Image (spheres, helix red, strand yellow):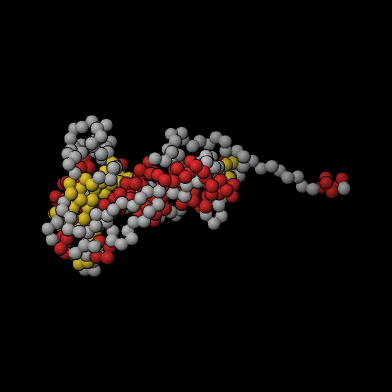
Length: 322
């Protein structure tokens, strides 16, 4: 027996290294360092309220908590104390119930494709101070597009709506397409030739939108630091700005389609319809798409993400040895 125990191989304890954000384990420090270089972990990533693990997106966090193969210890707590919309965990069921009443939002009433008049905000561009209540600092935009070109596949802006954080309409109008319309996409837009025959020319629309967004700020200062310019929120903003033929600084854009915590695990974008149902708790685009309804949804998503806990501490390599 002594000979057998003496001849048995000894188990050598291997030191392993753990990522302080996603908890992945590595046998070598250089492998962990390489992981940190390419992972781009951020304090703004969603994290589990139980184990504090960082996830690349809210979709990953959902899989961690309520997916087909969740982490059991976290899932047990989340099922009784967690909110399925914002994914936060609360101290008690009473606190959770009170939270759900404000977390699940009510749908807005679409303006619809009726023969509406031009709506323009009464808020004029001014030199008001940054803390002036009547000057909105964030604006959401949404456009509806009809088709041009041989097969109607070229996107032409047909209507546009701008709203502020309080969901007040700042600007809403039909837009005169710059090319002949070959497909009104009626099933989606609800628009016909009658809606657009007296619509506002695109150049005038551009001028009014830029006046609202720039808020009297110079182009140079807007491009460098924003100044008094407004942040622009939307979903797939690139498409809206392209069809409007408007350029706006990238650092002034907040795109819910490109915000990584709201993207799929493969970094593809979710639809606005999916994001609204999953994170706000109500349906949109059940029939005709409405620029006011979609703009409100994008603004609400932005405000919900902005309200998340955003720590200022940076993730470090401390406590990596396990």
